[in-house]
Image (cartoon, rainbow, N blue to C red; front, side, top):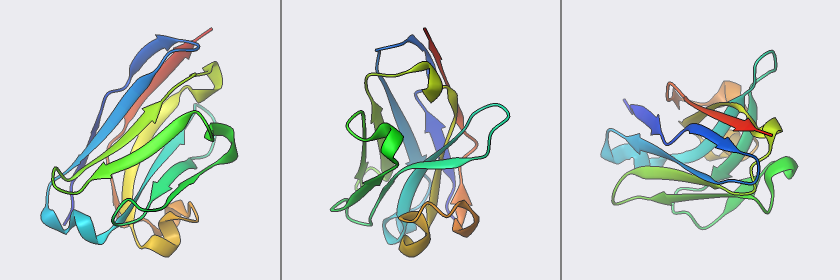
Length: 125
């Protein structure tokens, strides 16, 4: 079992930055590819960023490329999402997830093995 706990959400103005963290409960975290998803009110959950097991390759949805950076620290068993130049349309509940690399890097949310409970990000204009 892998338990995931997100933190770092909050309310900021457009153009600001936030750094999300996702702490994993167990060492087998290193066996999983990891991803960040978000779900805005009334919308479907969408993949935002993904990273391979060692942090060598990263993947982003077009809407966040150049603004968001995903990273992981396998010693601390923690996943990060640095979010810069935030926009009101980034407002959503953000979730971290762990799963098989083929599913994670393709942002296939149905294929994830583990999910965190989410952290809320609100961007005001």
